[in-house]
Length: 167
Image (cartoon, rainbow, N blue to C red):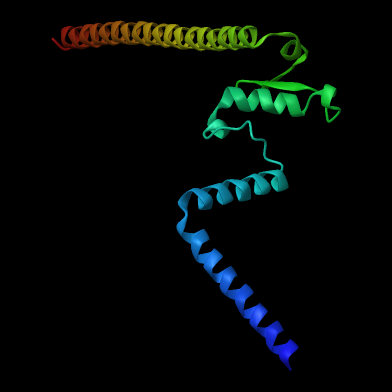
């Protein structure tokens, strides 16, 4: 009986110590923050999230293109290495692996400038075609007016001739 009583008292002491420790855990902010960081690290490793990522990286298109190319790279033995250019165009990224980060940046800027230049050329072409259509429309309108004037003169002449015949 005495042994049982001692065992129960030991359990009570352990539970009181755990309760005291639990209340201490809840009040020490630095310890809480440290445990939270450890918990987040465990979660990241469980989900396979790299520690290199920063907030907002998911919205950085250039970074996403590079990451996608890296994961699809034959060096990773996953799939053919492809790099997206713009939204729809694809190109082999053998160049991507051989260029430095600055060269990659310069290449992307050059590609963007080329797309902008092509867009501007297309706009100019559409404007030129619109001017040409407007000029053609005016020409047709002038020809129609000339034909109406001729028709009016012919009607006048026939009316005058008809009056002369009646007189």
